[in-house]
Image (cartoon, rainbow, N blue to C red; front, side, top):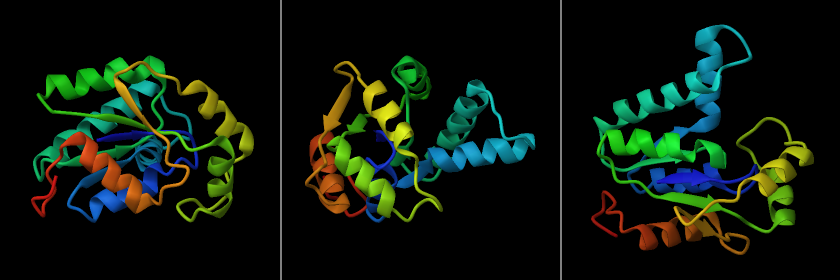
Length: 166
């Protein structure tokens, strides 16, 4: 499962709920930090990031069948991610978490997964930019808790968890 969405959409928190159900996780923000650390520089090339995500998918696929990726994926990058999954014969489902804009702003102000508050211009930038075709399932999680969102995703993707539940 690939969780996409603007800052404050709930990607990391929902991924944590899926981890509690047996998923292995790749956090896009952690991958960015890993690439920066490896290269000993703040800037990174897009190819370096996508290659690191592909490497992490390969590693985690050795240990389990259910992986969740929480990462901002731009529309122009979607085909590259699809290529990664299909070249490895992996089933995948892209989910765009899209709460109401003000909800995303409020979540950014209170979240604990980052040390600082994300500037609102970044929230707006990605909120407007993340428009996709029918290959992405949009979930309005404005009124849902992270656990409810995770349950909704599991019910609508037919993924079997470690507990044997769909």
